[in-house]
Amino acid sequence: MTVVEDEFDRRLVLSATGALKEFNDAGVLSAADVHVAQRLARLGDEHDERVLLAAALVVRAVRSGSVCLDLATVREIDPALPWPDHDAWLEALSDSELVGDGRVLVWDGALLYLDRYWQEEGQVCADLLARRATVAPVLDEAALTAALAEYFPTSGYDDQRAAVETACRHWTTVITGGPGTGKTTTIARLLGVLSEISDQPLRIALAAPTGKASARMAQAVRAAVHHESFPAAHRAQLGGLEGVTMHRLLGSRPDNRTRFRRNRGNRLPHDVVVIDETSMVSLTMMARLIEAVRPDARLILVGDSDQLASVDAGAVLKDLVIGLRELSDPAVSELGPTRRFGKEIGDLAEAIRDGEVETVLSLLRAGTAEVSLLEPDQLHDVLLPPALALRQACEAGDRVAAVAALDAHRLLCAHRDGPYGVAWWNRQLERWLMESTGTDWLPQWYAGQPLIVNTNDYGLDLFNGDTGVVCRDPEAPTGLLALIANGADAEGKAFSLTRMADVSTAHAMTVHRSQGSQFEEVTVLLPEPDSRVLTRELFYTAVTRAKTRVRVVATEESVRAAVARRAQRATGLAQRLGG
Image 1: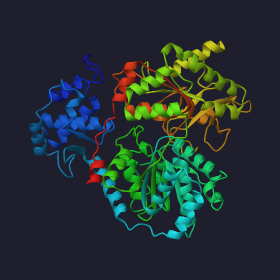
Image 2: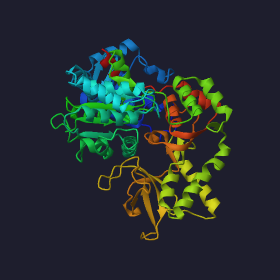
Image 3: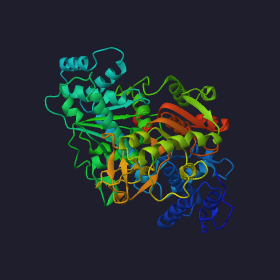
Image 4: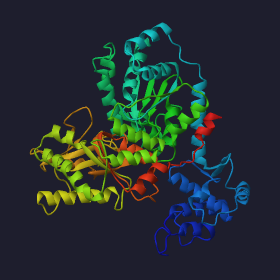
C-alpha cells in the first residue's frame, strides 16, 4: 500500500478520525470508502469505529472486485496496521444496528456483505438451484443419438460431443476451456443438434458482455456453420445468427443502470440463450440474466474460468465451476486441448495457469519464434513496424488491409496510467511515429490511428470494447473516416469521425479490455512486482490473446510475482452452490 504523506492530498479525508483515519493515511482506504462509512454512521447513529472500519472495508472490497469481506483474512492486506481484536470486532458487528437482514450490512457465515450484493448472490444461487431441480428436458433418445452421430461423425472430438450431449440434457450448462479449445465450434454444433431434435424452429440468442466479444462469437459461429463438415440442414438458419451485448439482449433502461426491461416478470422469448466470455460477467449482470431466462429455456454459459474476472464485483464463472463440481453436477463440461496457437504458447499459458514459475521463466528465456523475453529498450524495434504498416495501409485508403493490420499486433498493459500504462505507451508510440515519418505533431485524428470504443451507442450499433482504425478516404468531408472492425465485413463498418463521441487511441490497451479479442502477435508489458493488479490471471489472459507470437517485457521479479499471485476475490457463491 502507498502511504499518503501530504495532508492536503485529495485521497485523504480531513474529517476522518480513529481507525478510519489510520487506514486512510496508510492508503488502504480511499476517500470514497471513508465517506460511505461516515455517511452510514450518521444515518445509523453508529459510533463504534470498529463497525465503521468494517463498513469502509466492505466498500473497498466491492471496489476491488470482491462481493463481500472475509474478516478472517482481511489482516493480510497489511499486517502492520492496528487491526481490531478479531473476536471483539465480531461482537461489535453483531451488536450494531447497521448489521442484519434487511439492513445495510449482512452477515452470512464468516462473510460480511453490503445488502445489495448479498441479495444478488443469494438470488443467483437460488435461481440456479431452481433450474437444476426442474424436470430435465424431454428428449427423443433415438433422434439425439442420430443427431450426435451426424454432427460428430469422426473421432477426436469426444470432449465436444460430450459437452453437446450434456447441454441437450440440462436446462443450464457451463462449458469452459482455454482459448482455441473449440468452445465456439462446440456451440455451433450444439445449436445444430438442438435444431435437429426440436419439432419447431428454435429462438436462439447469442450474447456476450462486450460488443467485440459478441461480434467475434457470432463470426466464429457463422464460420463453423458454413464449414464443409457442418451438416447442411440448418445451415441457413444458424448462419444468420447475430451476436448482441448482454445489455442489449436484456433491454437497457435509461433510468437504471442495473435493471433491465427483461426480468422475472417479462422473460426473454428465446428457447436457447448462449453467453460467451462468461468470465467477464459480474454478479449483478448474472443475476439480471438468470432471472430473465425462461425456466424452460436452455442457458449455455461459455468461457475460460482461468481468465480475469469482471471489472465489477464477482467471479461468477469460477464460482459456478467450483460450486457445481462440488455438487457433482454433470452440467459442467471442460474442453481441451487448445488449437488456437502453437505448442510453445500453449505450454507457456499452461505453466502460468498451473503456477509453474520456473517453467515459465525457462520458456521465456529460450527466446523462440513463438515466445520470448524482451528488454524495455527493444520495444522501439518491436512496436514501431506494425504501427507503420497500419499507417501505410490507412494512408493508401486500403480498407481491407487496414482492418487486417489492426489485429496484427497489440501492446497489452496491466495499468491505464504511469510508466507501465496504456496512456504513456500510446503517447510513446505516437512520438516514434512522428520521428519515423518526419512530422512535428499529430492531429486529433490521423491515418493509422487505432481506436477503441469506450461506451455503448445503440443508435450507431457501437459497443464498449469495439476496435477500429482511422483510414484515408478522399470522399469523406475531412479526408478521413473510422473503420470499426465488426467481423462480418473485411472492410469494417465506416463512420464519420464526427460521430465518434467516446473513443480512445489504442496502440496499447489494457489486458482487461483485450478480453474477447485475439491478435496475431502480442507484446505483454508487466509492471513492477508490487503492483496490485499483477496476478496469474492477468498474465494468463494477456498471453492467450496471441495466435502466433508472444513477447513479454518484464523483470524476473515481475514474472515470479505474476505467476505466484492469484487474483483473490471474496465471494460466497461457490460455497452456497456447493451447500
